[in-house]
Length: 110
Length: 113
Image (cartoon, rainbow over all chains, first blue to last red; front, side, top):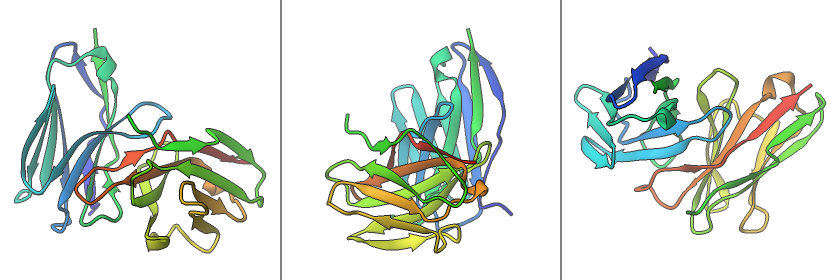
């Protein structure tokens, strides 16, 4: 079983729709959960950072962590064509290494 | 907004040659990392560095790899004898403390021919 599972997509949505992304994981020691956005051949850009379970909102982005189900989500409201990118979930059990998901490619069509 | 800066953006090297990838982390950050991403694959952890020493390394980070923070600002990754399979995007990352996310650089695309 992979440590972090993420559907690679592509996920195609019309402009203005809500984008819903998720990851599951197997390591119950993970405490720090992140979502990154990555454009082609660029570095990952941090979108959301969450410690332990709960919800966090930042502008159009909402991150949710359910440690009991080992499931994390990212929601993007009012999606724009500029949101088209690959979204990576990442998590860590300490200040050490991050484990990344495979990334979900999102396409927002005008 | 502070950035992690990586140079060069693209490096082409002959198999067997040594390469040095350079990074300037954000100035008040204390934890430094190298990750790599082979085309079409996941981002993979290579090594973490704190307090002037390696704190953790992956099985990928074998004797061909080394890291240095030579002058308190630069953070380098050296690959001594490159192989074709070392071709990848290499990302440097840093963070200020455990309650912050990691900031990644734009990466160096290494092509070994």
